Image 1 (cartoon, rainbow, N blue to C red):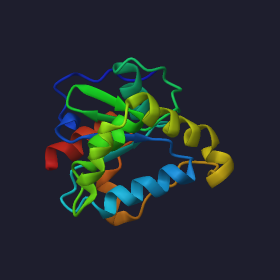
Image 2 (image 1 turned 90 degrees about the horizontal axis):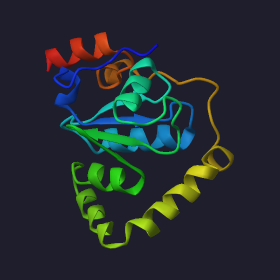
Image 3 (image 1 turned 30 degrees about the vertical axis):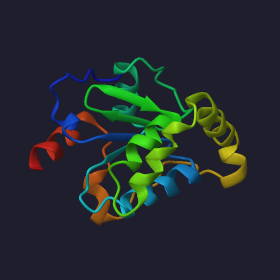
Length: 155
């Protein structure tokens, strides 16, 4: 059973990106975000991890949710195109301009997102298990509440 996460948990000090840890496209997207996030704003959590499942449940998703990235920013969870727009606002260089796509109706943005999501394993492949990032990035990847709280208290 997943461990409940209190609202005042230190892990909420950073925006959290929950991602499908076995999806190649998702891994590439996480690496894309990391390269454009020099201030290390975001923390990353595989959806398949105990912490990922606990956060999904806390924010009203089924524990086996894999339909979208989930961005948890403070007390709000965002999915699909809205999550990516909100992430882009916090990236460096010209990427915040991507947030201008908010003028496209959400229904259209999410339709495109969902179409890619349904085909992501076929088009981009998948791993058999969630791969661990290099040691210099370990502090940005969280998998359980205890280590996440420890890491949050260090920052």
